[in-house]
Length: 331
Image 1: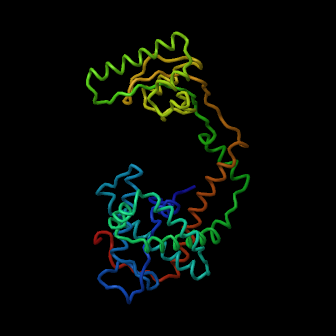
Image 2: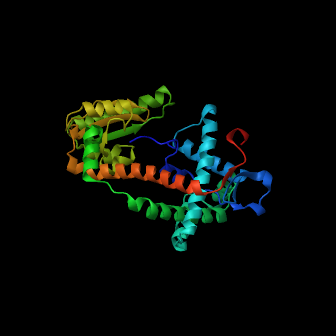
Image 3: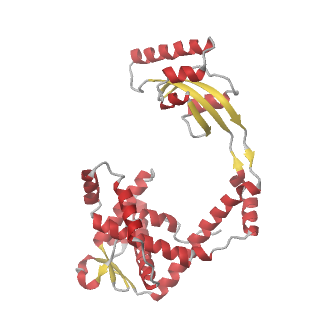
């Protein structure tokens, strides 16, 4: 499927990034100098825009993504476009009579509050984002109304045929690949990366003593429970199944080189010294269509939802009065 012009933020991501999309006020209540845009007379202010930019930047940082100076102008344009889109969607939700369950909205707000250690931390974040508890509660209600609109007016009309699912499966072999994975246990003796030679030698001596115990035939899981300094010690060192790319490279290389039942020699990583036991190894396989069609259907549904929601918004915008007072270079 082709990518539409809004792929910088897919609609699904937009609903997450702009979860607290600013509530526009009527034009007569705003200082005209504060206006960034207006949608059917409802104003989006400079404060609204700045608040959303802060939220988006913070979320991108948490995702490990930074915004370069060359991308900043595009980001500003997309944030403004998304604010306009969300305002249009909210207005449409009200026209269609969508009502939000206030109890569910209150529960969502309480869940957000639980992400903060205490009221002080919450208040500091609210101040940083230039918002308030009342604003957030209001935006949760708006967001729920928008989601219900998309669900009833767009998602409900999406149909994925068996032919489409099979065609996608056949043309995307990567979707059916089950990569090689291994189940392993380990024993860890921690040593800080910045430790001096004496500390490293002490840790090395500990892991060597453990290695001797294992070579004498002592049970790996029992020794791990007693001596490992990893949280997995309570499970006998069991780390479960993992694929390549999940562990630091020296650990991964050693774990995948072992045959089931084998124990590695001492492995050094940034966390300290390890002894690794391979429990089971599964080779790469290709899952049959019947085992992957639900996943394929979900992928196709997301793609169609993004595309159809964009078309839905475009139709609403054709009938809306949209005014933009400040462009990205002025914000």
